[in-house]
Length: 412
Image (cartoon, rainbow, N blue to C red; front, side):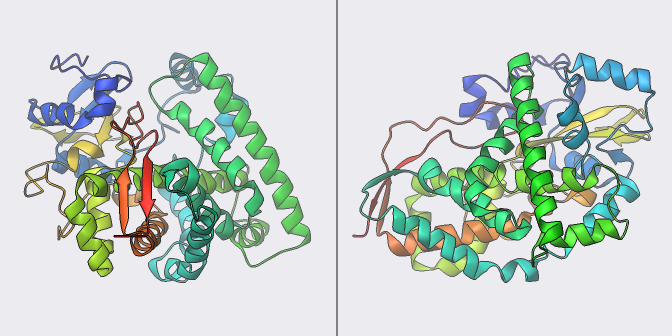
């Protein structure tokens, strides 16, 4: 429960997983930001407040240089982030959690591979992966959409970009999920051990891959990164940390939004029918899926300077929790925000963040979704849900179905 409003805010509860948006609505109606003691931060839910903090250069992801070594150690122990050397070196310190010039330097090194034009050139490869997976499922009348199909696409695509062997895509997904689960609210010792072991194994795999590419460079991102490191562009652990982040970011959130998106279309058959008839509308519809069910509904920022939010001045040192899932349903920004409208335009959602930390892989995620939904709707005249209830993952930082059983038929 939050201290300032009494609103029941339990991200690990079944009720929150089932419908976080009722809680988000209550938070938006509260008088200013809401304190969440479990993470010692103030929750922001109105679109204007979230966007303001996300785009303010004085709001940072990392506390480097803002606290003493003793303060940092105390904070690490309190949050159970300590005594996990691989996770601390290669996950807790990364492009995602850097700011200022180091962040700009690392982002510039990668940007060329993730622009809209560069990603557009990947479409034939993505189509080949999607069609190959569906060919393997040919003849099956029922599938578990996530595990049988959707979970295999993003990893193969990002592995292709980086230059990691395709046969390791399933293992990289498992490592990624084990590593990032520790960023959520539940930081038990068991989950801590899972994250640390996965990070160590992931690190060892990337060290071997890097050594192989140093001997045999190819036309892939890791070979280019090796050349950039030789030119002094990557420092210390940044090379392995950045490779790990690229692979992790290319898995979980896209898998989750694919599941949410398919579930939304199943709940809105008129939208599915319209997109089957007019697949050219998919890019706009995909933006609405991201608005309506953002797969990463929460991020944090630390204030390095005073900022006014909700009519109050907040001191430097304040930590804010940005509830993108709440901001994306704010009636002050969106007309009929609780309605799923595949033709919504403009659509100024925050599912990809804003400002310096705008999601680097957003073009890849949208391409994956476009190809997947376009191909499924073209191949199958009927797609229906084969389970009564769809359970969603529990947690503050994730949003997506646990499983989605579908019946597929080529007949309409």
